[in-house]
Length: 172
Length: 172
DNA sequence: CCTATCATGTAATCCGTTACATGATTAT
DNA sequence: ATAATCATGTAACGGATTACATGATAGG
Image 1 (tube, rainbow over the protein chains, first blue to last red):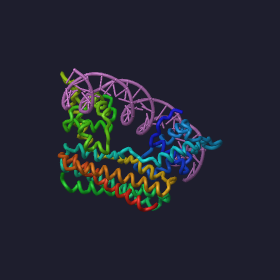
Image 2 (image 1 turned 60 degrees about the vertical axis):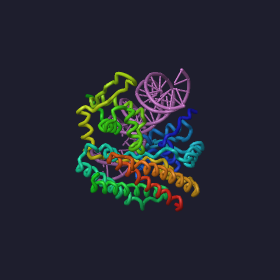
Image 3 (image 1 turned 45 degrees about the vertical axis):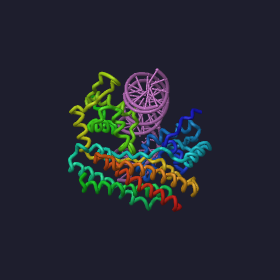
Image 4 (image 1 turned 135 degrees about the vertical axis):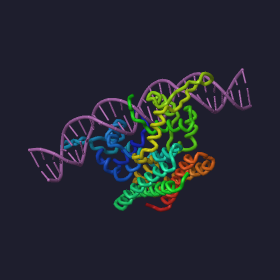
């Protein structure tokens, strides 16, 4: 029962199936307008991961008889247990923010003040654009947990938009 | 000149060398107390990446004659150009926040209100701990660009600590 | 001198990304 | 009908992570 340890993608798939996304495409749709904004799962992952979980006995796969003949997944009891345990378990891993703009700022010694300001303005704009997207969807999200996650994203974008805005006007 | 496209790690290494970190260990040290907090580079990456960049002609490698005989890197002109171009180039990739706590919240339908509160409290605590770390180091960071990045981290941790704190007290 | 830890790598596996490719539906 | 796009995958490659392993240096 090769207990290969599960990755975040594994749990995401288990969670998506638990929320009713029984096909890979449905998983893609469900993530697209919410958690996918800051933890993007390429669709190929959502197609590749379920077979692994089937192999581990955490998912069950049914093949449609007609039409697209797509693979329809459902949770097994061990799968449900694995998901629940993960949800309850305190998370220890440090969150990672992989922001290229911050990386450039970190290494920006070689840039002039104007170039730093340009970077900051571009970053501010990007964050405001993302903020606008979140504001436009937040009211349409019915699942309260999903809505809470969108709110977190909203707060984050606001924070960073302000950070860059200040940097654009205040020289280092 | 196999123009394999450079990854963020590539530019990080170029940037670190530009800032005077001429050995892999020095790179590790320089990142550890600043950008490494939210974009962690395992030391093996900092040892594995430079040879690739040497291969591409972006770094030059000198081997120490004595002692540890370590590899000492320096920027070539193409390497410096690549770094500068990257720094000036507007960044298009969306920043990614990979936060397991948020992922659990997203899938937290199956959790009770108490369990959500427990998750939120644990997350708040983790963010406050990180916040304390940033506060303890921010004054000691001399490089203004590094300091700005630490400030960004500080704002982020504060934002998220508050987000989780509110969630812990307000039922969904 | 001996030990602990600092420092420097290597190896192997596997996941994630990117691109390719094709089948089904819908719109015109 | 035909084109466009929606939907569903596969393949290949490379990078990232996780362990393993060993050589130097400093401290006792």
